[in-house]
Image (tube, rainbow, N blue to C red):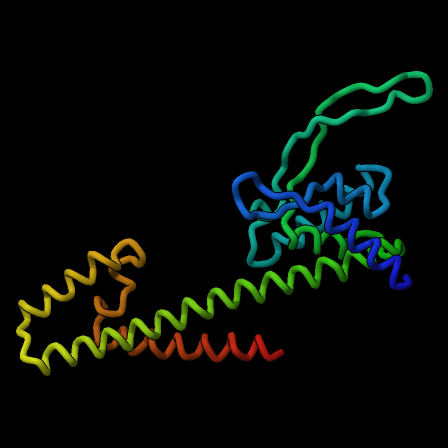
Length: 215
């Protein structure tokens, strides 16, 4: 493919994306993807679809989270002189990862499928980076919470606060933070050894995420 063909193909794939009304959730319809990948027959396309579902089930993911069966209204032709009829057909709402798997199991002899394999691989990688970045920020916030909890404990006792006064400080903080994190997972409510274990785990996960960003 030359540059113009690649841009045209990318535009066609970009135009397939749908969004759940009122939510920023992307999905694709399997029958839309079938047509773009050059499959004239749903039965033949279903072979790649079923293989993709099986592959998804063999990973840590649930296929139901990526391949959601739906029924859609469609117009089918009766042939020459027969006119068109309306009917309901089987379809699937697909995530980006589901589209990636389908492209891997489709007929790679088609140029559009070769493009789709790269297109959805790149899109899936982009989403992973976004998810990793959000997780990284959550880990950074959690480590900051550990540090704040230690500083608060040390500072309160250094200033002569007794256990009852310190409890009032904690209760005030709980009222603000309670809706954001379960009580048992917040650093200030964990035993000393648990806090140390959490700190070590966060440190390891931070290193792993940073390493992923650099690769």
